[in-house]
Image (cartoon, rainbow, N blue to C red):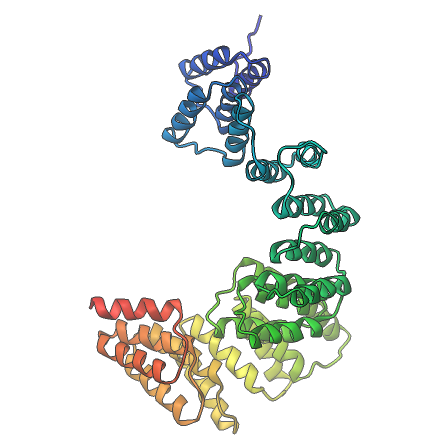
Length: 456
């Protein structure tokens, strides 16, 4: 006869079963047997044991288990831990107040236990309830219905909140806006946005993010851009999430050039794109590649605009070999290179450490009668920085100024890095003073180079 050896799931099931009937000592003994069998407890093991002790009112034992959990490097599941404390509270004569119940509802929603969360919410609204729901309670329930995709219930809870005389705050308005945005209901989201201002609140970055998402999903990218610009005018600084929302608004509607331009602006503002930014841009780019291949197959000639989009997109997505392949196609068809193509190619060569090729392309811009833009100059600064040639980097920075092109934070940090690599820390501090005089914002990269210079 073959015996099955119990594993961690077996022990977890036993601990859970004993906890359900209040046999916390049995649960502890099973945990000891588990350790004796050299089976390491999982997070579920500890959570089941905490619940077993908590539901029996043995809060001291529950705290001991929490401590042991942390000591063993598993780390507590904070949501489950909070619910365990709630069970402890129920076993005493302490009545939970509205704040405690709000925390419990929040944890239940996070754990996907929506029915239990609704039970607590309904009990708080009962006629003789000790703890009444407040703005936080209603906002959590709106979020619950949003997660469940129940749009009508979100609005119904919001209206119930108003009917009970509870005035919305910026968080509750933003929660409702996010619901409409997720369904692409831009008119409804815009109406809530207007209510925020009418009721004396100032829309924050979350408000603008929801509105941009709503317009993107409603195929209104220009409206998204309009509110993005409004946000900046109102001194509300865009963050990574906002930029990604605008990239998605353009990208999801097939406007690849505009999406690439937002990514470029994002970098100039000192915000580093993340995986979401790149993946958002990748979808429309793949469509552009497919269309280009179809055009070549049908012998339809692409123009300079097409190649500008393809080469810029390839660079932004770090697909450098493809960018150079498009360059070969462009040259083969004798299509003149645009300033944007030159700039993107300089960036490509710079990223690959091909300084001579980057210099050649940079000079070709000037030979063609165009003036290099801030992107081209910054790419050359990065190229000379990689080559550890601070003298050339300094010269190109001066040329940039002479041609009336205002350096940005990225250009300045690149030159600072070249100075530090070249053992010229005093020049870094001089450049920092220049940035202050020219009101150029100091980003994280600039601060890092300044600290590095001071340490030298």
